[in-house]
Length: 162
Image 1 (cartoon, rainbow, N blue to C red):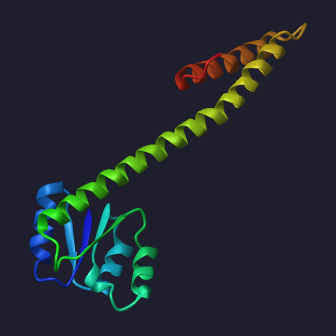
Image 2: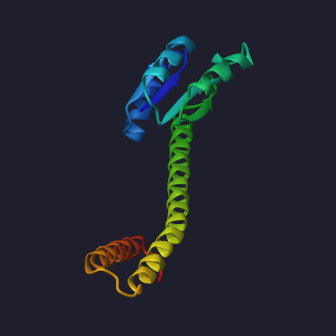
Image 3: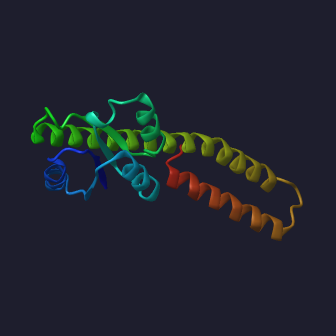
C-alpha cells in the first residue's frame, strides 16, 4: 500500500492517479497525526509526503521517519508539481526500493551460502574420517553414511562445490 500525506485539495485525485499507475492501493491522510496512526497500524510500500506539511519543523520529519518502517519516503510538493510528475516519482521510488530489497536478499543468500559452505565441509570431512575408523560398529557406520548423504544433498541443493 501507499500512504499519501497531504492537505491539498488534489489529494484524492492524486490517490486515484497513484492507484491507476501503480495498481497499489493508496490511502490518503490529511494530517500528520492520522498518518502516524496509519503507519503504526499498517505496513506501506511507500509514503508520499507533501512538503507543505513539513515546513513548520524538522521534528515533524523525524516523527514520520521513525514510523516509516520499510516504506520508501517520497517528498513531493503538490502545490507546484503536476500529477504526472508525482506519479513518476512514486514509480521510480518503488522500483528503487524493490531493487534494494532484491540486492539485500541476494547478499543475505550469498552470506548464508558462505557460512554453510564451511559447516558442510566440516560435516563431510568429519563423517568421512569417522567412516574410516577401524572396527566401526555397523549401526554407527549406517548412521554416519546417512549423515554424509544428507550433508552431500544439502551441498548439492545449495550449489556448493566439492
